[in-house]
Length: 408
Image 1: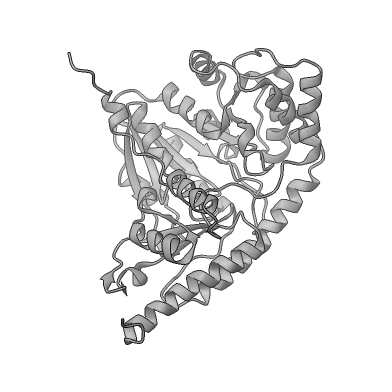
Image 2 (image 1 turned 45 degrees about the horizontal axis):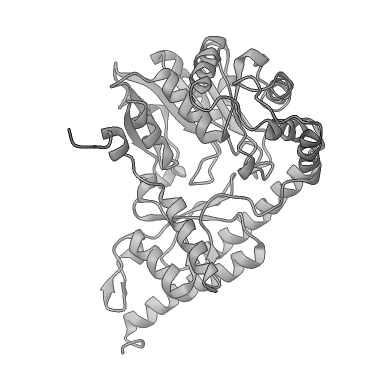
């Protein structure tokens, strides 16, 4: 029998965000001055008190296996954080600590999805959701948010796609890639929809600390016991604490589901890095001043990049309310010609910007919106200004080419 790959592996798309980030890093290594609006990774260092806790753990020899789903000290810290910040009661035995948010989500889908189960995914979506669902044997079902509603979906839209095969709904709030936030009034009808159809809600709340509306964050599971029982609340320390490389994600769920996810993890990765767990305890229990300082910096950057986009011809975007992304509609730009060829796709647009203008952006075809581009402002204000100047020059160059001034 010939050697073959599994159908699951062959059907998985590689991450376009990581591909573009890798390409831009390669160009930087060659000496190019690339401004990267690509992957969502804070540019701040991990706070010193968190790093010190990791050093202490190493010095004290905390370098061996731990329980697969996390040490109890960390679970207690997460439980208290859920109580304090999310107004949710998750006991330590309802919590599973995983190798980052992606791993937590993978555990969820492995634990709840059977072959053929449908999972509703509001679009635009984080590009990994559909691939995770497919790897678990599920079927992604997409519902498209409209620009007039800041790309958010409604319960009425969800009602049109729910079937007897629907197993779960994914909610990402604050949203990646749009940076928009679902308010309490917008979430309540969706919570009622979840209970009405007796389905799971996978509530991805990774960006919960990065909010710029001045309002208190609202977790999906907070709408009463019935929706709480059906919701898996997923978060982590990567974005809020600038701990992307530490790989600490976690979930709060029913005890039954937590046991199932813990069992899945025990046969895949076992525990996450022991030292990172001690660092995470300090992150959650220690001073939160730097978390707020980073939030304020992101808010300032978000306001600035929005002003720059709003002033550009042929590009539109809603003002970011959370996370550190702005979601730009480049539909008009795609109708233009560059060096005699129609731009047509955001993939081609991204290539032009990277190769000729030294700017890396994320085309959003893999996020469900092929005429849009995501810009991450998790970079310095100086870099944002430089990058926006270059994008603006590109658009101005298009106008010159259209008028024939760049001929030849």
